Length: 164
Image (tube, rainbow, N blue to C red):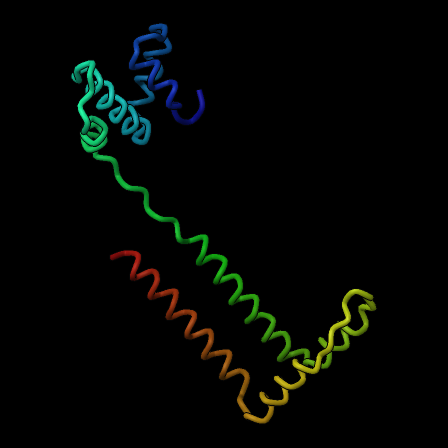
């Protein structure tokens, strides 16, 4: 048997269509495994509801069965989006730090020396941005520290917000 009972295993157990030895193993597993026991209890509720309903089903049958299950709504998994965002932020931060230590001229010469015919890129826009940066006389380590601080505050805020 795998780590958990499948839906099929639970339904066959509830139907009573298992050999006694297999049913005993399944019931022992249900005593030890909370997720399987919850799923078994939900199926038991469905089976009981199906057995108590008349053959002609009323209009609100589905609503009554679903509300009797007391299903927990699945939480939205927003970590995937945050993971992509944080990966992008740290990639840009890493690029900025490496540019600070290696210099922009190194990056420009690297791309020029690649000699890829389909990569015919003009670096004038990048040079203009760097010219503006130099004209502002900003201290790059201070700016990077500020960005890191903002990222840490955003992550802390997200963690606190998820707990409430």
